[in-house]
Amino acid sequence: MKDRSKRIPFRTIVSYNPGIEPNFSAFATNLSETGLHIGANNTFNPGTRIYMSIGFSNERYDCEGDVVWSSRQGDVTGMGIKFEHIPDGLLDIYKNRRD
Image 1 (cartoon, helix red, strand yellow):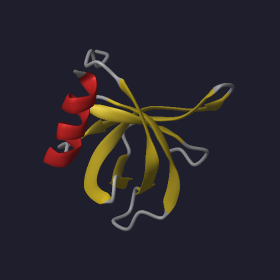
Image 2: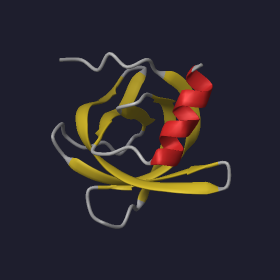
Image 3: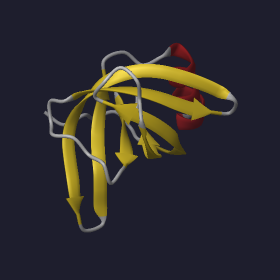
């Protein structure tokens, strides 16, 4: 079932990797309570667990999630990620921008 949480524009750098140390970087383009979109050329298959470091407003949020879709074609290049657990500070940013 598709995530029904409202997405908000969210442009920031995300470092990510299926290993413990994130070593790819790309921009996040939107954020929801349950996940985010990473506009990346280096994508991974659905079901892959990735570790992320999300920098925003002089803060860094480390988290992990699962790739739910990925594409390397056309205008939609990147991955949809479902958080395992969204860090409190990142959730606060989402709630403040959503309202």
